[in-house]
Image (cartoon, rainbow, N blue to C red; front, side, top):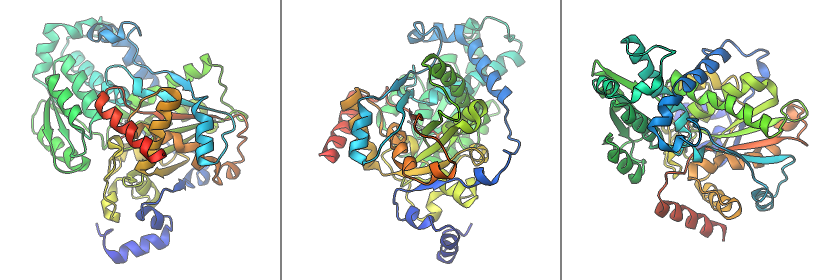
Length: 444
Ligand SMILES: *Cc1c(COP(=O)(O)O)cnc(C)c1O
């Protein structure tokens, strides 16, 4: 590829001066000029209708979900998370980082999503359910208007057992694919990268999932998993580097959020802009949510991704325009971060080809800052999340101090800021305590 040759690197840096601080691992904000230059968003590989269709699939599976997972009885089969206003944390953040948030700050608590405890419940569950439905319908076991409780029957389970599902993961995607596949009876293998936490592997094995461990990073785990899975004629690989289904599953979050905003009397229009801050790994979950929100709110919603300074994969892909053709290692960046959900060196090709037309920008965050926010969130709001999940809360600090607001002439007096909290509920107490203590020391 040649990007890592020193001569080439110099040329890149001349063309894109921001590469200098990025390769020095400094936290930065990149604004996506493309959205300004493009008069109209080009035709995307997905439509608003696809998103509504995806929501319908979730509805068809409600009877199954309610029966298969006892925790969904009280939610009536819905896998959704609350939107919470952070009145106590907001002044603390403003004080600590010396800035002012006009309007309100909220957190979307996907760390509390049932069953999987992370945002992967949206994309991962959706893709597995979609595949199960397709198989059942193609084989005459089910029709779209049938009773999906049948997916719990022994007949279905022994049918699905002949099919294998594989997935490469830094942890959370493996959890969601593993749990849902096992519940349906699939033979499932999770290929875990070196940064995956031990407790995630243990939990999966407990559920009857085969876990294969790699010493390399996420891209290696995906590559090996893909090869092994597709070698089986009845194998299906959930490909986080290019999945349309994961993306659509995430996009449904926009429809749910739209409803929550309505219920909470939060307007989104020219006088009440909405800012979304989304932690980003391969770019699938933040991309899907951005796609959905843009379909619903157009220019009144401004979506920013957050990546670790050591794993700015989507940032490098979009900044250079090379997307999945490059990885952070090409620029001498090591992809080592405590934010395991974001420890991704190469972006998703499918997601970035859409996000490049829709997102407002990307900022990068140091691991230490993630721990500090984690502890602040716990102390002030009694919310316990994993390090990756806190990256969105730094968004207002970057954006409100930047030229973005002026450039687009945005009235921020009544803005709504939503940081997407992406995971945490399944983290064992022992690990959570260590995260918290680490933040406490950093804040002292
Ligand atoms: C996967 C994940 C993300 C990012 O999602 P991508 O689709 O990889 O961009 C963010 N936070 C957590 C906790 C995750 O597990």
